[in-house]
Image 1: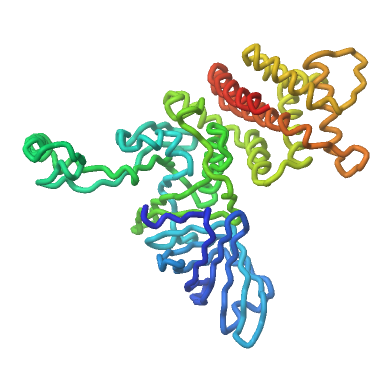
Image 2: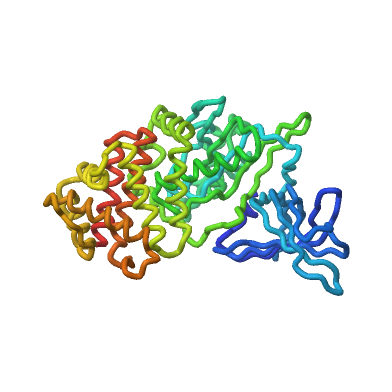
Length: 465
């Protein structure tokens, strides 16, 4: 499987046979262009349906790419549209919500139930262990494990490949050296054989390139729950790593439907697959990594993640949606300002909500960063005029200006109130950090760790500023 991983940063074209309900079999072409919607075209000598538009719950396919690598494909929630009708038959355009690619077999959406899933996220490997040192990483089958509500169990696992320990030539299988003499090498070889051969059925020589970290979930009731869990954990990991390129690379589904059980790996492609950003998370410098939190802290984080879904998903949606766009717009700035408004309301700050949300965030920074942050807001909001009847200063005045900024962005269709976004870019980035800090507070991450996180990213921002 590792030799056939799909790179969604590259354009791809797949062709093959697709199977519709009622055993209809048609030829098709799946075209994927990075940063765009992918499209599926089906070609048939006969009409697939009398209706011009047809909704099909699932379609399966057997396809191959330009290198003739073969994949089985499962498509969920499909819509068929007649694209054209000519001398060569019918051509259909197909839109769908999600595609699962597999090297082994399709996942039957109508029959297969899910016993457990293993999720492979794009930056989870780096978050768990620095990738430049993978060859030194110890293999632990179950790293951390905890139970969440409704019998949901989350386990941090590792997946690794190895090859058998040979009876002879162990040295050459593990080491390389041009400085050892043949005599020295034979002495080491003999010592290795004496030490390792008695355990050859229990150990193997690991392949670092095939050492992956994953998140295992039990129990998942249905495929819809799978999507929800993937989104929740992706959102959490995006915030923890401050890496908005976070995406699901691969899933492994263990199905349990009567006597039918299988364990196979899938790649997942969403209808809109944002992949233009390569990984930005840096284990060596980042304030958060897997080892930052104890097992009890991880249990608390996941418990709050799933128990506060309605509250957190509003913030997650806005954070991810804003980064799905290639540019910052008045709409995306309004989204962040609305989040600040919601945070103030949730804490019952009343009319001083903007002032208190901003000042409370800044109060936990060191004195130098606190002053620089205040100066940044003063400079970038200089173009906003407010009536300061109460003669507020510092964060009080900034709070008034943020309130006015939100009013300006909401009424962006009024030419008289157009906002110069070039003056608000750094403020936009600070607002993002405030929202993430609030998410962490909702997850009950300790104040000490939250402060370490925002000190790091605020310092980066101010250094650029």
